[in-house]
Image (tube, rainbow, N blue to C red; front, side, top):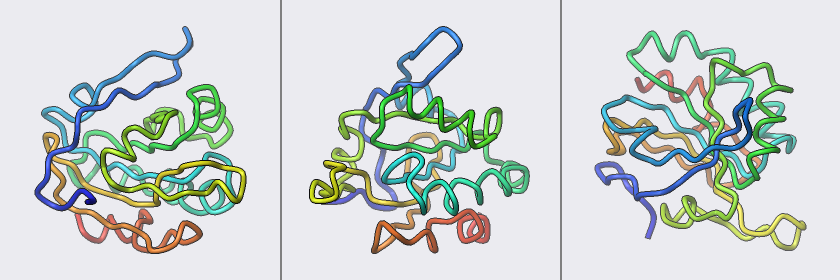
Length: 161
């Protein structure tokens, strides 16, 4: 069963790249007492994620935070080194928090995975965007296809804030 509006996020530990290497961050550290926009992508550097989904959040970061959002975060089933490289390559440093879910445990706990093994990618997160307030999901937009970034895009979520 997938997470729904009104549900609390499950406990999880992400990996975040820093100048000293990867560090762990828990869901409490990211979401407790904060208003967070979290969007998920199937894979860093993949076409829709890299050319469409992430750039929208980078472009609209100031407008999103102006709506009272403390943090904008992206999560993907990639290792923290790939997520760190993607953060640098995308120019999103300081605007977006890059969360690594390397074993898909967070995506699995949310009930928002799909199997991309046939494409050589293994289990991946579905593409979605959510507003989380103090760990509770307030808005949830899940795409029906991993190649789309319409209802989970920054423009759509910004209109809902």
